[in-house]
Image (cartoon, rainbow, N blue to C red; front, side, top):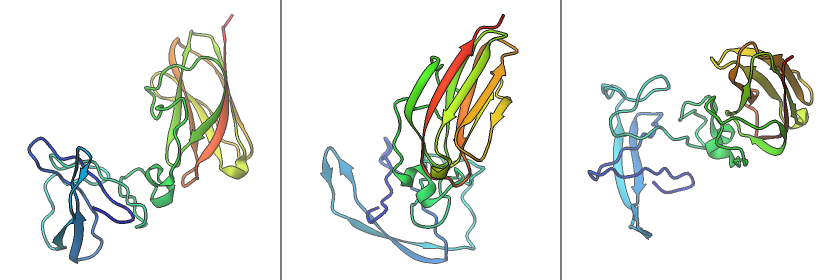
Length: 217
């Protein structure tokens, strides 16, 4: 589909494709479709479709707690409709898909499977709206973990927490001013994680990070 906010989807090996587009009201909708292959863009074709609110739902149709119909790609955020189309808790300009938020040099690190981070100082990191940054921390039992996240609260609040290998939170920094400091003694060896995240609805934030691991005695 073309326009200010186009939606794209890859065609399957059988030549079919599926795009999920929310239609808020009953009525007729017009879509302009183009195909792009090997650097060649086709002429646009107009497709008309009608929403019937009384029609049965598609079995397995995706909701924010469900699954996609077979062959249909994940929902994509539409940046100007005031809805959370991709079900990540934020919409429009606050969604990473629409915010233009840049990835930093430690991405991808958006879940607890992020690789271990060497202790040290890291700057010029970016936290995109609706996302969390994770950093693995390899420790032995009795090691002391110290984490400092530096940022300007006026540019957007950031919180931090430390998680055990099982994902449970063992320490948290959630002040309402600049910077967060979180420290904890590891009660078991393994891969702990630091999670850095913003408040709900916050804008893109830049931050720095200092991590140290002191061996236990």
